Image 1 (tube, rainbow, N blue to C red):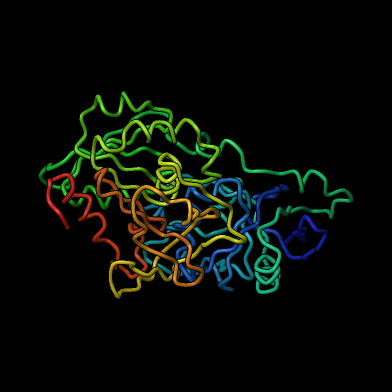
Image 2 (cartoon, rainbow, N blue to C red; image 1 turned 180 degrees about the vertical axis):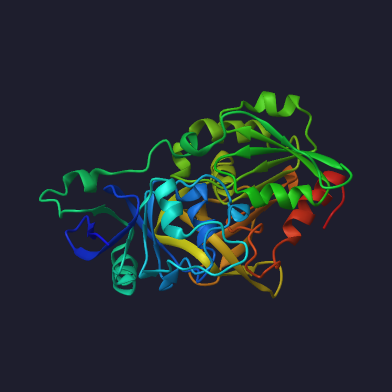
Amino acid sequence: MKKAYLVLQDGQVFQGTRFGAERDTAGELVFTTGMCGYIETLTDPSYYGQIVLQTYPLMGNYGVIPEDFEGKCSVRGYVVREWCDTPSNFRCEMDLDAFLKRENVPGICGVDTRELTRIIREHGVMNAVICDEVPADLTEVKRYAVIDAVKSVTCEKASVHPAAGEKKYSVSLLDYGAKNNIIRELQKRGCEVTVLPAAVAAEEVLAGRPDGIMLSNGPGDPAEAVFEIEQIRKMIGKKPVFGICLGHQLTALALGGKTYKLKYGHRGVNQPVRDQNGPQTFITSQNHGYAVDSDSVKVGKISFANANDGTCEGIDYPDLNAFTVQFHPEACTGPKDTGFLFDRFVAMMKGGDL
């Protein structure tokens, strides 16, 4: 295997070996704490523009299973302590190295991922480069920024996904980088899902006469999605609305709230979230680098809070027939603990309460 380097924007160098695509890449280095789920991580559009570091030391042991893909692979690079080149799983169709080569994503292994994680936790998210030679000048690495994120991952045209069984409701899903399992969770509850590009205007969405509107997850700084925020402002209150992750943040911005960048974000399948209306704490899957400023929320009521740092994890808007969450109820981390939120959305479309 070929020698490679992971170089941080502050000049720290980690030597390892290449796997995946043999090319250099720069990106925003972030870590995620899941001990499994690397397939879903690599195909989650919310990682657009980022070099993903896995804190768990071994990746690739069950191979790559296309049926489990959440979307298009959008990561800039992949960092692991060790990758398994002999996966064992009856559903496996290729190994991790072959997948990264196919997607033109460079990877580096054999580096100290524990030390890298400590650095990010202390310093905060920083840029990095995976390269063959340590660059003498890191100016371009420092300048790297994730831009045009939603525009880069949204679908090009609308698509319709039929309900599983009898059709009960029609849902318009605004694709800001939507994960496939959001569609599946709606389908199995009797929803026909029309996935729409993020650039679709509110008037066109409402003209389709959906029973409900779903606002998906996605990458980037939510405050930069000016067009999407304005469309949500026009739609909210006219149909039942359920927002997840970026959809949660954009809704808060549309209603006068503010967002800010977290030091190192929440990424992984073990994020504890407290229900503000009851005694329960849920273990959730999360992938975001920004959060809604709780003090800025003037419309609606905060429904969930992160048990570690108290950040806003959900907002209810009862007067607008809408609610949003920062975490991913479509992900199987509990494994089904927060699936009831989809049931709540369906109940809103039915006209009931849950």
